[in-house]
Length: 390
Image 1 (cartoon, helix red, strand yellow):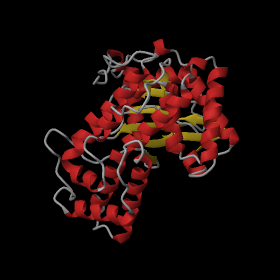
Image 2 (cartoon, rainbow, N blue to C red):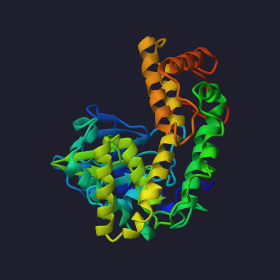
Image 3 (tube, rainbow, N blue to C red):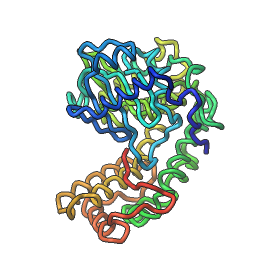
Image 4 (cartoon, one colour):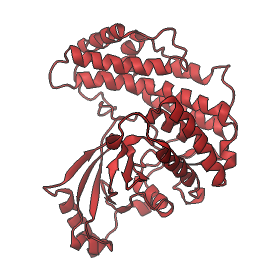
């Protein structure tokens, strides 16, 4: 499986007196006593006012401006990341999608970004329908993202599937789930997976299912892959999609599928989103990207439900194990509900013989927590930190 490329030389922190002052002032901003902390799955962000001195050095306007100090978190790999430098990608994306926050400086160990004013959609509408105007905004976003020129994107990993190799792209995603998520964590969670009915060969069987048709070859484009309510900032009814660290280059139907699943749309809005996506793609000159959509989108939806079983079950278990006190009945019930929901959604794609009820899932979690692998563990040699941050 291809590995992400190393950081390229031009990503190294800049040098010189001016850059030294920028770094010194940026460090002071990062440690601002009144900073607003915004924790994400992959980064911790400190939002602070932009002072005049730093603004002048960065050649940007300080009036009422804020900046975001973005600190990567040390996490277990549970989702693909083909470009290790989000700032390098943002340099391209922000040229074409003006609403996307820019990276003002990449210091290597952390980076300084412009801050997009507004409120997260997860605050404004945490669940339920989002409405026709928002659906149209999403469709337009996907079409504009597909229009970002391929030749401006950072280098892909060696051996990355070429444009139109949709089947190879899907197989790469399946291989990542098996080789980087399920396999490496089986030593700790194998008994829990087995107790709730997830077979060791689940993803291999998904890949080799003879009843699943081969995908239609489609042109590839830039994908965000994580467009959900918490990654969408709304300001005066306009949206900006943030957090591009999981972006990749591939089949556009994968981006639509992850969006449909992670937004948790109700049936009518999911149907409408599909229609608007296809319409927006065609209007933007990307009609070829919609070819085979009726047959192939369900395959990507099945994959999204299937692959999420592993991190969802592990996350539910680890959240129990990492509680400051012994989990109580309510904690176990909530974790069991999360496990059952993940299994229900993956039952058909993974051909699960049966989905456990809440009582069985709760018992499996209790046994795992009570066993030697359920307690807080020291780092396994060669594997590092064990907390799953999705």
